[in-house]
Amino acid sequence: MRKKIAKLGFLIAISLILSHCANRGTTTGGDKDETPPVIISSSPENFSINFDAKEIEIQFDEYVKLKNIQKQLIISPPMSFEPEISPVGAASKKITIKIFDTLQSNTTYAFNFGESIADNNEGNVFPYYKYVFSTGNYIDSLSVSGIVLDALNKEVDDRVAVLLYEVDSNFYDSIVYKQKPKYVAVTDSVSSFKLENIKKGSYLLTALKEENPDYTFQQKSDKIAYRTQSITVPSDTAYVLRLFKESVDYNFKRAKQTSKNKISFGYEGDLEQMKINILSDVPENFSSLVIKEKDKDTLNYWFRPNLEVDSLIFQIIHSKSVDTAVVRIKELKSDSLILKSSSSSLKLDDPYIVSASTPLEFIDETKLRIIDKDSIFLKSSLVLDSISNSLVLNFDKTEKNNYKIQLLPGALTDFYGTQNDTLDYSATTKFQSDYGNVRINIINGVFPLIIQIINPKGEVIESYLAENSMTVDFKDVSPGIYFLRAIFDSNQNGMFDTGDYLNKIQPERVSYASEPIEVRAGWDTIEEFVLTD
Image (cartoon, rainbow, N blue to C red):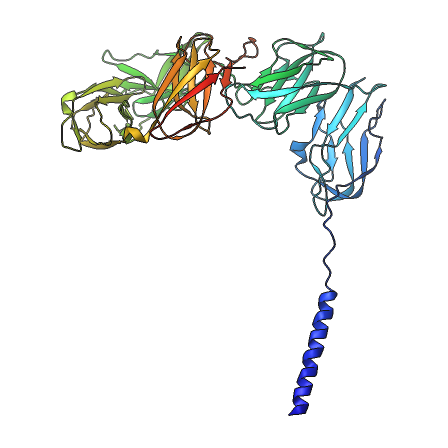
């Protein structure tokens, strides 16, 4: 028995010794490598002059890889034929640049790699490496700096391209649509920019936020900013550029039958002066209505009676053009009258809105019933909004109440004589104490002003046109964090007007309050709004 115990003790002791030895011998891998790669050499050397090479090699002390090189790499001036950059999808101890473009004479080129270069193992970034050379006998060293803002919105797009076009004998106003710039840079994380290695001269300074980056302005998709007057380099000025989306020029797109008695006319741009005339022979009892489709650049042309024809010819008239469209007529289904109500939660001053899928023509107020939670019938008024093709229902509301809204058969009649069946809707109101009130005291106001409350998503919650008052009151505002915005309505049309590059029109001035405001339920908030640039 004693021998067994001694043997067991010996085995335990040996196990402990071996375990201890194993722990002492475990490797940790050492400290994590946080050192970025180091450039050993460049061929030709960085900042070379009289450059005429077709290939550049940059040697590193370890294997590197290129990340997101398509977005990170900025070449200034841009090249007509993109160079080939390697490695792609692999690691190497060198970066190779193969140049296929014919380089401009006496020009300084810069390859800005941003944060695309990293070591292969730990991903340590070699930040903002720039390879520079000149095809002339010196390196241009002047610079232009500033900041890009959004003309209307508080937040600015990231990575906005800032461009310089040389104003010389070859310059023309529409060059931004057709040619790449002389120099280019990209805004950083705080929307600042710095164009470097520029030669002395006169330039057009612009900025573009492009959908498909190629450094040329596409009106339909891109935002643009520009200095109205050319700038002179060298300059100590820090420039401010305000980015805006132009209104698209008017253009008739197409006409197509979309239901039995509806033809849809697609367009781009301003429709205010757009008119649709039918040129085909039609019967004496023919009539039509034109209504804009919500949230689409489409005018719907509704007509009656049914026409047994193969096609219809239309003339589309605008102040800038006259177009003709031939529409083939097919046997399609008719549109049904479908009614859709607005939000069921109402403020005391809000109307109740019912929109229709086909044009409304008649309303019968005697077939409307509104009952509150105490079963009291309420007086109301109905208005037909022909622009939005909606029924606007107004009635006196009290706080924390429930309402039943009933449209009896025949309350509404559409363009084709179709009437509604019985429709039942409901709506509610909250306590006034569930909302907050906001008073805005305006400092440095230049009237008229459009004062707006904006939510963090940039959506307009409240808006008021102040024509001469230094005080603006917003009542029944839902609790939350908001921003104050003022639009300087210089042309007095009650809306924000964007810019126009070719006509050298800058967007209307917009000012934001420096700090957000908090609206609390049951509170009256007073804010001082100091207007600045």
